Amino acid sequence: MENQSSSMTSLSEAPPVPARHTHRDHSADNPVAQAGQPKVDRSQIQGWGADLDHANRPAYPMARMPARLDHPPSGPTPDQPLNMEVFHSIERPGVTPLFGTSAPPKGVSGKIRRFAYKLSESDIRHWLLLLLADRVNVVEGIGEDLMRGRVPNILAEMGAGAELRHNPAGFARKAAVATAVVGVGYYLLRRRKRHQD
Image 1 (cartoon, rainbow, N blue to C red):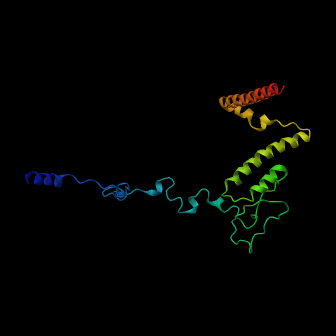
Image 2 (image 1 turned 90 degrees about the horizontal axis):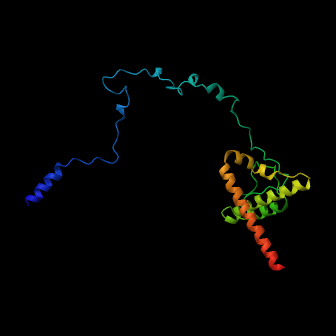
Image 3 (image 1 turned 90 degrees about the vertical axis):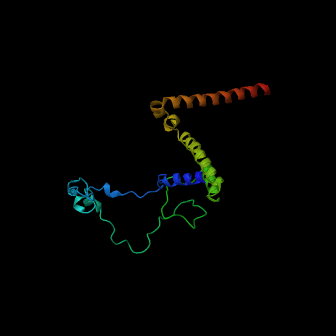
């Protein structure tokens, strides 16, 4: 019994555990709120109250230039004229009001994109087919350049010069991997040819 009363006494005398979320008194941070402290002239603090008076805002005169549309045009904004094939998600009822026209779908890549847009955007095949169409479009572009008599500088277009200048270690690693892939491919072709002979 004596042990229990002594343990109860020691528990009651224990210091209180501070709460996890205590309210902080921010008045100590405010020099005006502290008693006995002189008032601070806030007009002397650079930038203080810059949003109160527009004359103190350096960008305010330019904020209205050019003048905003105080009265928006009445009626709906006319849509961009549709004079080419434009793909849109099957989740949309139609084409967006604005769309790009610089790269119309054509060739094999256009057929791949046409098929991809028949699938939902929640289907992974939609995105994988679009990635494939991009890669096919690169090859088609190289073919078009060759047909026009222009030999494309593929390394420069892929940024090889910039990478060699700014990331020589990465360039060396890519060159080594490409050389290894070409070497293995050449070796396998030679080996196959020997077996056929």
